[in-house]
Image (cartoon, rainbow over all chains, first blue to last red; front, side, top):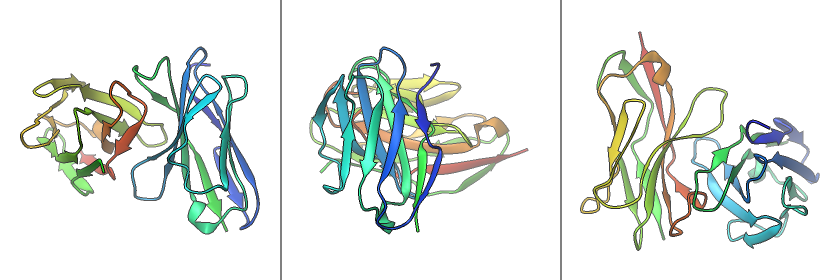
Length: 113
Length: 114
């Protein structure tokens, strides 16, 4: 596609539910990043993939957060047993390599009620 | 740890006014510095960047100079337009060479009135 695509754009989950957020990066982009952006804050790094390898997951806030990119293209961020503090916009970005410009998707706004 | 501090908004200006959004950083080593912009309803877009001290990044009339002595990367534009209304984020890369592992400031919302 022309840009990074994320789905769904909006997700409302009841506390305790599991959610899965999808990211379709720009075709051919090796690097993929996930960020979490709380209301009124800047994005915070969660995790980084190079192809299918998750090379950095230092930003994942708890073991309820899990990300995968099994074929080196589409990535899924899964949050288990959602809590209210998980409410945020989740941003995905991709780049040709780690050293080149990262392009961001529009994000998925998750609201946990 | 590494961090970015930018001036709080919102900032409201009249068209053709001069814009400055302050950004300072704390980092070890030699980070790359970025300004990203988020227009209403759109994703983050890279506006400009600088990779070493005294570099000036520029794009769309915006510019920012990497000042190592003051650890700053202030964003400026000489004459803003209504279409510049957006949220602006200052960011640094704390991983040498990386443009994707970014530490962002909180963002500054700019509103330009005709």
